[in-house]
Length: 245
Ligand code: PGA
Image (tube, rainbow, N blue to C red; front, side):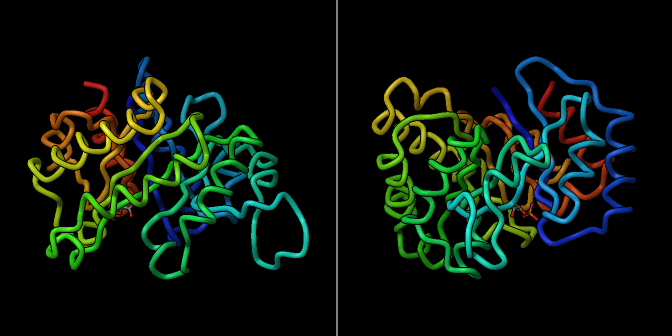
């Protein structure tokens, strides 16, 4: 399966999201084996989910907490995401890890909680520029993937997003993407055996309609997690068509 997900981060207002959904839906033609998802901010998840209902485009949240309810001021549970029509949840995005202190320990709990409420987790991993320059890229990814040893196998999408390529306009070279994606593929086999081979591995980080075709040709790339270019329905539609080609 290939999957393209729009990560809107902390952008847009509900009326802009509505206009996006109308424009995207008008052009979108689903294709077997290719999934599309949109991850809007929490405040208009329900509206986006209901506008996309029946179109085949799924709604994702950008984060959630692992407890199902209780005194956790400011947090949102998996149960609450399910309640507003969410299909999945992005977990461990580098902005969550680096700005908000997300830990691998919490991610184990979050993935299990997502499964409990039948949500599809999209686990993000990636190295910083300092780690890459020091030659630690694969060690970092290896340690981030250890989360999956503790969860055991289940439905999952993995997103490789080099931190230095996110929002910077500096996309990773196909050769760099190939090295990492084939490493992740092997790690998934080591951790989950045949279950691991079913996990789509997205690339993310400054994806645009200009560079996506080349990225999609890289072995073991099965889609994209897109920030900046995903907020324009025309660009997102072009990315979708490139993935479906
Ligand atoms: P970008 O963001 O496409 O703007 O680099 C990607 C992401 O953070 O998921």
